[in-house]
View 1 (tube, rainbow, N blue to C red):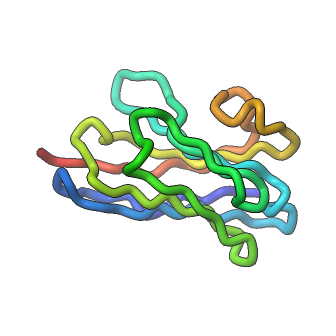
View 2 (cartoon, rainbow, N blue to C red; view 1 turned 90 degrees about the vertical axis):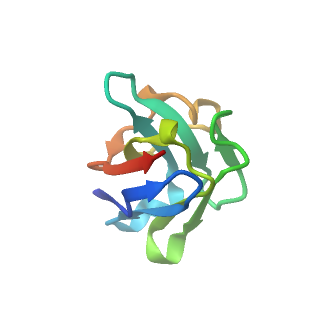
Length: 125
């Protein structure tokens, strides 16, 4: 299984972007999928995650209320809708999947064993 992240770009503060994470392989619907981000000089941090059927979603405090994660298992795709973007949201955004994890580890980077290549989001002030 491979993950492909897309949708990044340059946007002004207050604007919106929608990221997509598309996976190859049939087992995608059984994976927990998360979005992480890494700003220059900083550690990669958790942003959002979604459970297998999409019924459970999880957010980091710094994106809660502004970002929405969703999935379309028929299209093997997870989306991250980002609204009211701030300059501090500037980062490379990575999608990742847990192929055999549990919901207890959705915020933990080390619990994810599949990673996409990242897509750059730049928010100008």
